[in-house]
Length: 73
Image (cartoon, rainbow, N blue to C red; front, side):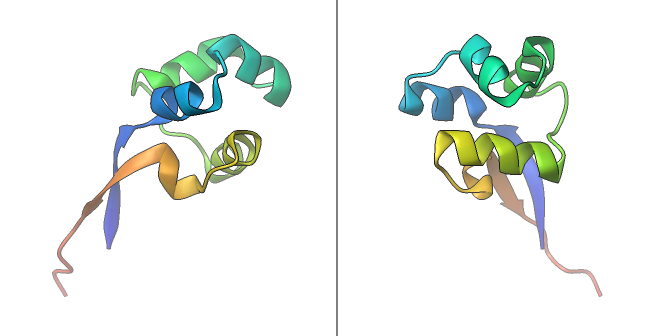
């Protein structure tokens, strides 16, 4: 199992040579919301992560660090 870690959106934007504002314009996601993701104030919904990963041409998994969690069953 895994849990979501640090958001890597800032890095993916740098890789794609896009600004937060440009991503907001392309995806119609408010810039303030993009900023909250970049600053780890909110975790993206699956639908948002899919839209952003599509624009940035990366996998959804590339938008966050993923921490392994030991199954305690």
